[in-house]
Every structure is written in structure tokens, then in C-alpha cells.
Length: 187
Image 1 (tube, rainbow, N blue to C red):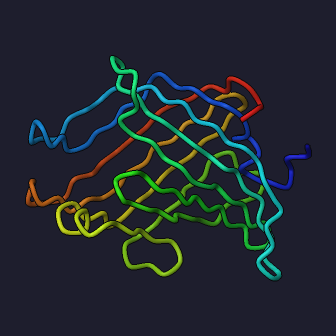
Image 2: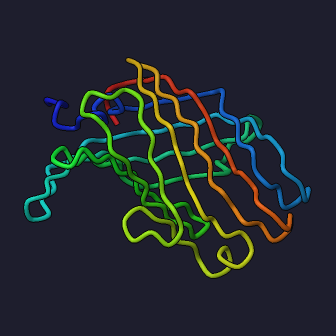
């Protein structure tokens, strides 16, 4: 399949695994911010075109699961899409996590870019965040940023979710980063 139609997302197609992840977040059980090392499995399966009138998108259906090093069940999963709008040079990532939190992040990206940044902000009508009632009251996410870098069979990301956390009476920068290696071109 000619993946050129996926622009800067073409290099993500396939199945990936990374064993050097770090999650920095508030741990409810311990009542403080801590680092959690993790490994991750991610797959990106191409689809498209999707036509919204004159807008044409090519996308990747993706699933990811993150595991603490000593556990067999994921502590974090995501399900969503990465999309490329060539006419407007927009990359979009929309995903949901099973805590009742949804993100639609985006940014302007050149078609040949191997590194790019996507952003979302609470209240934005184009690239925004949405939480369930409980999370909105106790741990309101106000911003999401991710920097992505793809280099051959290596893919890395560094993302931050800004959270107004009730238990800390302040702002928590929940960060996740990892470098993954491609296991195969099949998702």
C-alpha cells in the first residue's frame, strides 16, 4: 500500500513496543506525585480515505496499552485515531481512555515532517478535552501537548497533560514519555 497519502503519519504504521517508558503522575493510593516505569505495546493500522465534503483524511486506527514492569495487566489503555488532512496540513490525534477522558489534539505539520507537536485545550471548539463529571470536579485536565518523533523503526513521544488536581490544591503536570521500536509493519 502506498503510505505517502498518510503524510507525516506514514512512518507510524505497524506494531510497536517500548520498554523505557516513564509516567509521572499523582498516585491516589500514596497521595503524592511519583514516577512509574512502564513498557508499552501500540499498533497503528491505516485506513482511508475519509471524505468530509471537500476535506479528505487518511488515518491510523490505534490501540495502546501500558504495563508497570512487574504486572501482566495494563494500568493505562488508549483507543483512537491519528489523522492526516493534507490540504490543511493538519495532524490530529483523537483518543479515549477508560477513565472517562477524551482528547482531540492537533497541529499544523509539514507532509514530510518526522517530528511534530499536537495540542489540545479545555474549552476549545476545535482541538479540545472532555472529561466525565467526576474527573471534571476532582482532576480537571486543562491542556494536553505531545511531541512526536519518528525515525525509521524508532518512534518516541513526550506528552504532558496539565491537571488541576483537588488533592494537591494545585497543578499537576502528568507526563508520559517512551521510545518504541517497530516489531512489524502489520498492525
